[in-house]
Structures are given as C-alpha cells and as structure tokens.
Length: 234
Image (tube, rainbow, N blue to C red; front, top):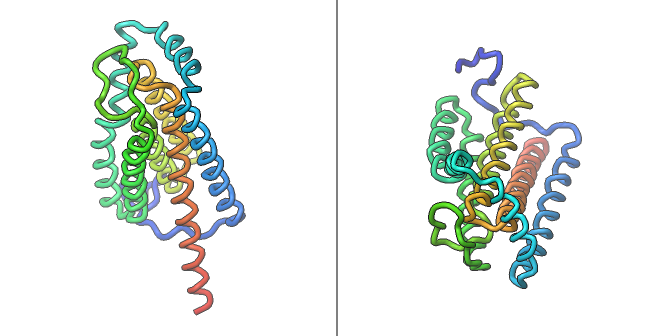
C-alpha cells in the first residue's frame, strides 16, 4: 500500500515511549514471570504423571465430537500451526520489506527463531512420549510442549501486535486481535482433536510462548529507553 493509505502507516520509525511506559514494562515482565512459574509447575506435574487424568478426560471429551467433516477441518487448521505458517512467515517478511517496516521484520524474525529454539530445547528436556493419535500418524518428535501451540502463539500474536500498532482504524485493530486469538486457540484444539498432543502440551506451549514474547517485549522496551536516555544526556 502507498504511504497515503488511510488504514496502514508508511515506512516506520522507532516507536516512541507512550504514557505509562514503566507500567507497560512491568505488565509484560509480570506476565512473563507468571507464565514461567506456571510452566515450571505444569512441567513438574507432567514429569510426576499428575496430569494423566486431566489429559485423558479432555481428550475423550473432544473426541466425542469426531466426524469425517470435523476431521478434515481440524487437519486443515492444524497445518496453519506449522506447515502453512512457514509460508506465511516468508510472505509476512517479504511484505514488511516492501513496506520498509524493518523493525517489524526483525521483531518477527527474532520471535520465530526464538520460538523454534525454545520448542526444541524444551522437548529435549522433558522428552515426553506422544499419545496415540486418533487420526493420521503422530510426529516422531517429543510431545511437551506443543510446537504448534508455541509457534502459532508467537507468530499470530506477534503479527497481530505489529499490525495493530501500524494501522489507523480501531475497528481493524480489534478484528486483527480477534482473528489472531481464534487462530491460536483453534490450532491448539486441532492438535488435541487429532490426538497428537495431550491438552497439557497445548497449555505448556501457550505458557512458553508467553514467557518468550513477554521477555523480548521487555528487552525491546528497555533497549529503547536506554537509547532515548543516552540521546537526552548527549
């Protein structure tokens, strides 16, 4: 779109500190710390086998709604959490480059690179065997946390944040956030429906993503604050 678009801003500049700047940092830091605490607790519960009843009850409840049509839909939705997401990431980065949204491209690249590393590291640490799949074949990787949940949360959540900060329409911002939330939840649900993840894997994926995204938001805010302080002092 051109720079005169009524909906999307033109080439970006580094965001300026907003009112309640310190409160925003504390809120993000608090969310990351709380998510880390909950993830650690959930991980311990998984290692001790205390989530088995919860996981089985949710799996059986979701599976009761199985049908050929639902299976096709859930299979397609599941692809949005990894296979299709890779293509979407490439397209988003290309569009950001075209619009000269360099910070947005860097943010998305860092978020997704970190989410992939985090997913692989946590899977190796917990090495939880996957459940028996209801439909299709389960991947050969470990189950905890769900990479689809983690990566989709990071991609669609960060993308929603980047876009909503750069569009002028309040209604469009709301639509962007609702669409992102629906996609992330649907992808997590699809993995449970297909039987390739335990529900606790999905929750853990969301929590890990919250830790990662909250951390990089805080680091970015702190970096900008220090940069601004140096310019003022200079």
